Length: 344
Image (cartoon, rainbow, N blue to C red; front, side):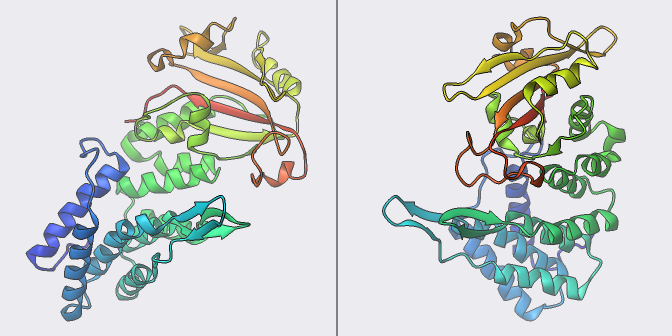
């Protein structure tokens, strides 16, 4: 790993930046609410750019500039929206200098793992866009994965690199590859590995396809103030099968299996089941619906929550994007699995 060769002022910048990054990732022992204000970031950027005028071959300094840039860009990665005038992007967003900094770093040292990692992180932050009048963030996932995988290949022992690759793949629905990316860490006992193992313990119907929705999955089951990696403790799939057909699929695994049904005010049908380990550690479905009130306390959530519900254009907000497998269908089934295992 490259060590910053700049003056003490730059080393101080790196220390403060690393502190903010640990807080951003909610790493154990980090300062939960530590941030760098605009004045701090402007000062850091000026110091790095001045140093690079005289030391343009310092790869670590170019990477440091891009790391500062991620925080500089955060406030402008947004839009101003109003009912009368729609949405307008923040015109101050300009990621070109920070992309160029990483381009320079990689030209100087193509096999620097840190440069590849921060390139992936900057790409992962995305660029603000307006699409059909709606604000969104575009991410070049193909290039992000190229650099994230390259960083791991060049420095396979770096846990942060593996974590980023694993959560990126999970966000994209590449669940098996995500599990492989994090498996070497801590002999398979890393919290992400354990979460992925939990979720993989429940079979998924063959005709179902991944529909990653991140925090939305957890919000649906009421997990708030979530710990680190909690957004990856839930997964979502879609299938053209009905709720009855999904239930029949699970009954082949557990003969007593049933979804405890509900109907929303808009007529949307759904159901839930709670799978908890028995004395032999094998998952078993709940015999009744009392778990629905018990799980109001997260401390009681020690198994897996399995939910199914109707989804599709008939019920969802306009503009929702669906996997190709169910595109054009007015109603289909969504399967959600959430583990009660806590992040760290």
